[in-house]
Image 1 (cartoon, rainbow, N blue to C red):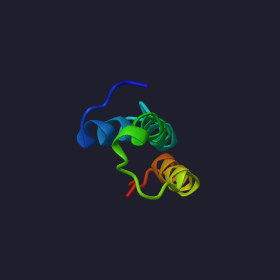
Image 2: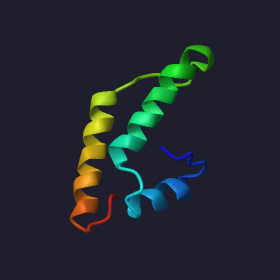
Image 3: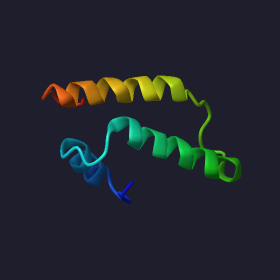
Image 4: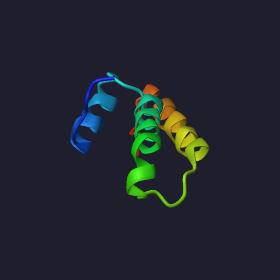
Length: 68
């Protein structure tokens, strides 16, 4: 996965289909797993819900609709 530093870069990559929403969410979940033990920034993790929302966004993008 390419390194995407800003939300704009992430949105552009999603629209260009350089990355899927599921891949992007999975990368963020992985990073949370890597660092949250040290920073304790995430109170509640709901990865199943995040990945389901990402799958919905991917389906909308594939249909030519906005991901929301």
